[in-house]
Length: 109
Image (tube, rainbow, N blue to C red; front, side, top):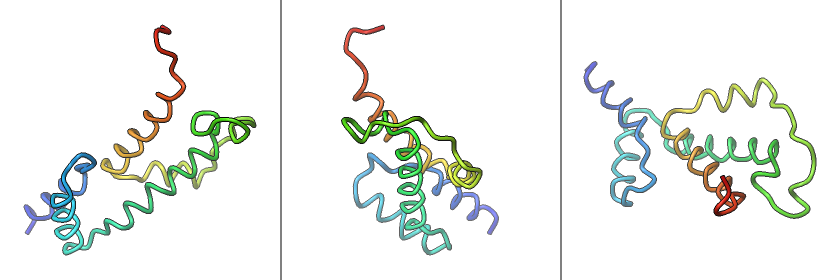
């Protein structure tokens, strides 16, 4: 039984961004059968994206939406982001990297 729990946690930590749909479905089915909510993962990712984009608007928006100073994070927001599992953190990191890449000037050091 202990070995199964270890495999479940390992599977929960693996990101499936680039995995085919059938792999994502198998992961979802297996984890939901063991009490892990893949829907909560998706919700956590969206909430984290909303938190970051509202605080650091210049990175995630352009034009008039990019104005305003950088706001401080609340304790609840930091706790929310800090409690993400590795799979969600990986997805969030990819999203941040993609948005930062939009601001990089080619050829600049």
